[in-house]
Image 1 (cartoon, rainbow, N blue to C red):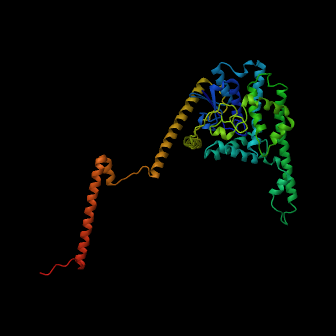
Image 2 (image 1 turned 135 degrees about the vertical axis):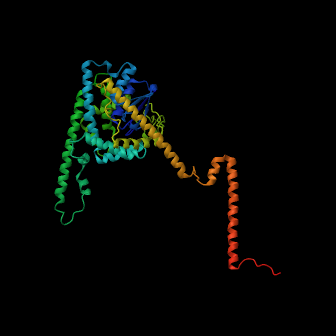
Length: 440
């Protein structure tokens, strides 16, 4: 049974990640539903390359959308793009790369770099991740998004939808000295926001226009049958269309000027991504439950159950961070999942290094968990440590020794009491308080 580990569901979609959505679409089109299961683990530490999506086949882990395609090609002996001619395959590769780069940056601008939208994403990740990962990973993803979008906008696209009313509420009440400066300040902020909005719309228009032009009037990009390019497109376009965010400039742009793309996404969604997903039901293991509206909570996808392994999750999370701080990492050359150009010897050495890293991490996690359990038992009093003679007798003599030790201790206590009374008697004699001898 194949296991596809992904980032968890959100916005009625089976995943919050475009790459995970693309992988779901590909398996939905190429694999029988009884041969694979969908695991919303949201835990990149499970994969040796620390990347999601990741396909698990017994003990083999395959990271990334392209790596999954190549693995399934060798496993099944066929692929979704086998029906394409040479020119179409080259076209699919070129447009697929374009969707991943430009479409990914467009989603970064919309979801992670707009402050009000990022606040919504924090709430989404809080439902998918345990403590403390839910407080750390969203910030990491945002920093990565900011690095990918460096140079596109000054700092954040959050001001792209600022209105004059918003500016008026954010600025402080004017005093006598600042009353004359506030109108100019508001005009400057609004001008900057308008310029950023124009730039964002231009970026979206260029990308969406190119994809819509390539799609044309066909049902799919290459005729009447889907391809890997359709899987990539649905992964990125569906998030842009279905993600309901406070600053929905990308969704508004798609609906207003790219209706053909919206129709395409709506038409193929059921075939590739299933129906609408109930996030709470899926994460609680009730994906097959029927909702009040009569639909299946999991959208008809072969969902699996996420085992709550919070201690290994958190321990591995901290261990991973510590190892990265000291310069030990398993990420080298594993992000993209494309290692076709590696020499066999280099690839073998890299895989051995990854295995050693994984073995070290697992051993450290086990030792840490055992130590934490013992510490908890000692702290809560479940395990007591006695260093007195009684404890030694109990350990040395077992049950019988314990009885003899208790009897010896009782005799010692009685002797101590007698000595104490004798001491009081000496004191009484000295003070003349002792018992008087009778007269003869």
